[in-house]
Image 1 (tube, one colour):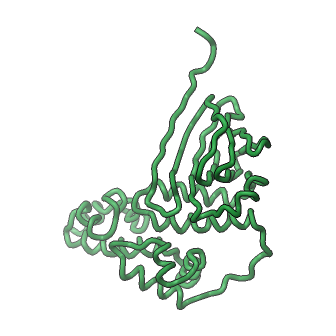
Image 2: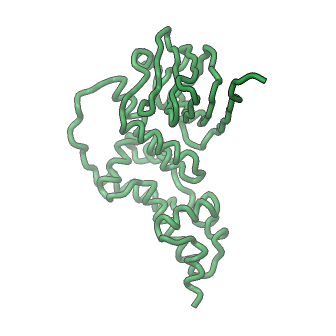
Image 3: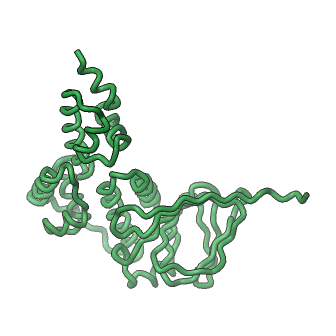
Length: 270
């Protein structure tokens, strides 16, 4: 029996219902090393524990904890643990609708981005993508992640104060009110209004002090409250108020009301 550690590998992968996201991939490796390979999508990588060492375009790079790495499509790269305990990573594969081929060159030159705000936003995006029913939130967060990535790859002069657009905000609110149950994706809303998705979210948040996905969930919870007090079961309420399932209803209901739907329903049994 040799003295080597047992290699550990664990992975989780899925394709969410969010336009532009080809795959979500979470992995923990202790010794596994990727050989040289390519992807046909953009690879957006954050490392939660340990670090990864990789070669891209014949240059060595690394991924410390506070770094966001963006590896462009069609460019060979590899990857191996840079610490004794391996690494735990979260990866998004994004198609060209989010980042175009014109950004491949800048990404090859500077794939590792030291940007705490971007790092935090990518982590929040992963959280939203892991929760079925929160696609509007994920799409909104992805829009801002893409915008910040482009600002690194194509630096511009600092923009002035965001222009307020109350009419645009009102039109989006009307769309959300019309589709409380069925919901609406950010891309569709931006096409109907029309406006750039990032500007649409900013205009709404600036006008009402709440993000579009938070507004939509608030409207759904309000409907759920009325049905629960009428005696409907939480599982039935979830289906008719636009939630993915009862767990989705419970998560948002408890966040906004402070108790679970079941306890809320029971409180009305006087």
